[in-house]
View 1: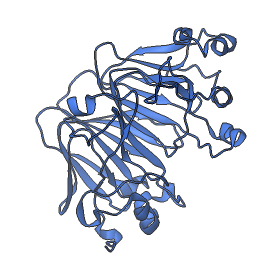
View 2: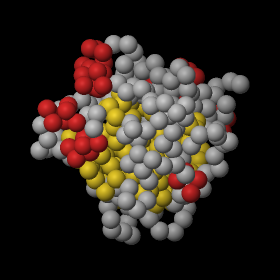
View 3: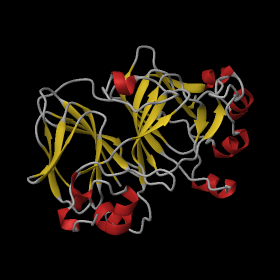
View 4: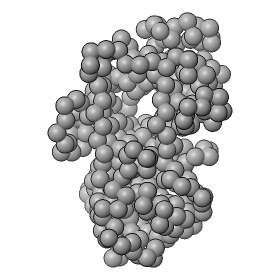
Length: 336
């Protein structure tokens, strides 16, 4: 199968890669109405866009169907990623859906400095969570409480008491959390989350809440690496409150604005939204959250349903996001 000219690139949709997780849930099927593949353990993650050595997204639509994301990066380079990502050998971001039937482990991701100290292939990871849906009682633990001391946290890492030393939030649809590398965190049970992150798979578990894996044994913890990764001084709230009202016009809210790795915007749309990748110097990732939309321009449209993400190549230029259903549509836009 040959590649098309960059002038013929279009909004690209990819086949999800599903991951079984001991804590997985049922909200991808209950909320998003997805038909999941056969599985032995609960499905906890859908990797919607990924370019890693062991996992790679495959194009699901148009002339490039069957090509991997990595093949696109190698062939199109800057035309796909943009000037802001020039020189990248892999696609710089990873997009996931997280379906938490039980709460995830208490964990931390390293920053660049910690990775240099730790070695062993450690990769930095800063991420953003957007709450697509939350069951009653769902919560988010993100960041150390401002009143907790370093000694208290270190003494409680192996104890359920650590929860009392964390910033603890009621999970609400439309809220987002900016989880910088070094932030201690745990996603609570009953959350369906869109995660935008650096292209990294480095996670250090601090506590697994006494849980055992599918083999009946406790999962591995990484206390030594975690202690070198936790930012004990950063106590700002990571929560970005979502809009709770409705309007009869288009609105754009900044979710992550001052970050060197990615920018994220919450688009609340009641009509056509016009945008341009060339002006931004970057690809656009559009993640459909509420109601169907179509993305593109005449002759190059891609329809999306809630839960799906499309990649609009950096060279694509002017395009539109058109709501297809009544009421306000929600789309999360990510760029470099």
